Image (cartoon, rainbow, N blue to C red; front, side, top):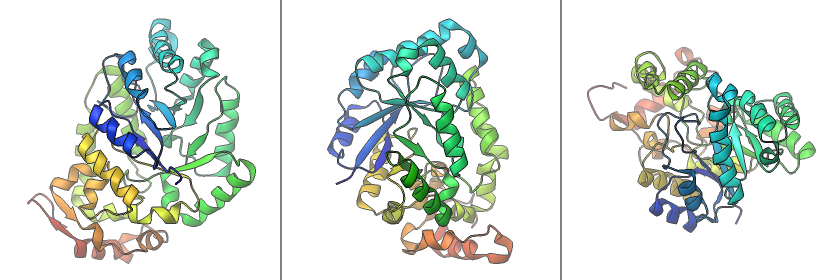
Length: 351
């Protein structure tokens, strides 16, 4: 059995037991670091009080690879210029490295990567630098460039890269990139995000990530409110059929993607551990019998208002959507399919 999942690490004993019992299917875990400043790309992500406590929990895992999330879109200048703030981050990474519970970091802000390399070169030399999903690696040129830029630092080259979510629905381009990587970068594992559930080519993505980063820098909480009022949440409420255009990978479709890639990343580190276990189990079993919206991280908030029957989607759903031209007003395929497999759970959503 080849492990094929990258999943969130939650600091809970019961969840840890679940991960270890499923370790034959899990290639890696990703985790948030504790500290005064949130450093990953989620507001209010779950972690523990101290890095020592985190390291002790990570040491109990039997998962082969473990990555710290430093994947915020950007950081306040103080983290890059204030030695005291940077030292706190270096200390946390050093504790994890010394206890051998970390293989690398997942990053988006190359300024931070360079700063860590400059200030802690010996630490960087034992850690992989893995470009995060929001570096949007969707071409051979981007992949080559990012690997080259990592090579300009003291960090190790990544064992894996996560390809841009748009390739989930561009299967010919995915195969082309995968073949190119196999020929020139044979040791590099390829990963796709499975259950994110955001809009295709989301027009709010860059700004939303920036607002989350700003919240994390300033201890604010406006990103969710802004997204609900002006962003993809308000659009999905008005046109919920668009969820079918989202570049998610259903558990039923996993095997067709594993021809080209090695790992499917599961999103949802802000979900409760019981729900996350259900989602991971669904990908292991290649089957989700419930509301599609409960499976999808970014659209999970809509599941209390709307039921979308995953069983109503055909076995070749991913192939059908791979030829989508996003001209809904003339095609109407997603609208009609959505209406046939969904129903409202409240008066607030009308399909």
